[in-house]
Image 1 (tube, helix red, strand yellow):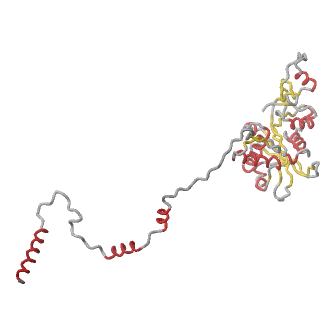
Image 2: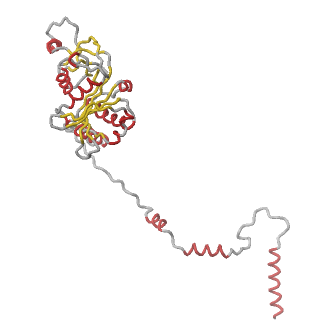
Image 3: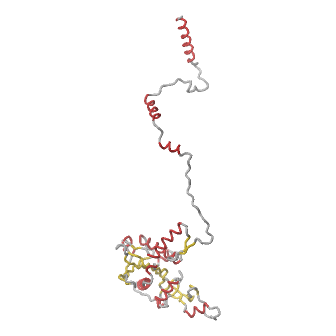
Amino acid sequence: MSSKVKHTYGSKKASISRSYSAPSIPPSSPVSDEASPKQKRPLQEQSNLSLKSSQPPSKRARTSLKNKGITKQKTLTQLHFCIDQTVLRACPRCGLSYTKGAPDDESLHRTHCTRIQKGMEWGREEEKEMVKGGIVQVSSGIRLKDGKRGRIIYFKADAGGKIGQKLNSLLETINLTLSSPPLTPEILHDSKAYLFLLPSLISSNREKIAGCVIAQRISTAMAIASSAECEKAIDPSSENTATPLIAVDSSTGLFCHPKPLPTPLGISRLFVPSSHRRQGVARHLLSAAAETFIHGCPLDPTKGQIAFTQPTGDGNAVMMGWGGGGVRIYED
């Protein structure tokens, strides 16, 4: 019986060995991985696989799987139609019209309103460039009506650096207040900027810009018509055989003669913050410009040597009071 068992195992072993013996001709298709004999992995690779399988999944994966079906809801804002009220607002302090609820308009209004009421500052950064910017101090210790004392400086309107940046910001505020277009580079090249500076109550190294005048070199201007001539120009029933007048501001009755007259100095911009008005700041700035704009040749406004460019209602009052009726009108 044992010989029969040995004979049976021997036959199976022989059949297995015959099945592994492949023919010399290679097969037409590649042998699959399942058919190939399995090889043992190296010991280091097996240890790495065991470590990876034993480590728990990362928190990020858990979180992403946990919050996979949750979508973040966007916060909505309830809007209402207001038909009986307008969104346009006119500030009573600075006079600027802006759109209420528009972030850009409200930000512009806040900045503009602060500059109009309090003015801008002149600090140590600008003082460091006095020599480079060609700053000249006209006078100091000027007493105003409220007892405060300040000084007047001037420099070229096309100056660069910190001084040019400060003047550009100031001119943006002035143009926005007067609804005037920006001055061209050609005009700035022929102009001087006069500033009235007051000591700051907060810091001894800073000063407040209490007023600004931009004086420009011009060639001709037009004489302002008298009150009698303006009344005839307004009254349609009056017979006026003379040359028709040019209306500068019909609301204030300001007219001028069209004939150009030789005029050396023009005031293109005049600005005083509301907190420093009616203190004599504008008069001091205009007088400084008339005395120092042309070196060694002071100008007299009562003789028609100085002109303004289309003044507003407040500017017209200053022009008439300071110039004694002799100031002229010119176009930019």
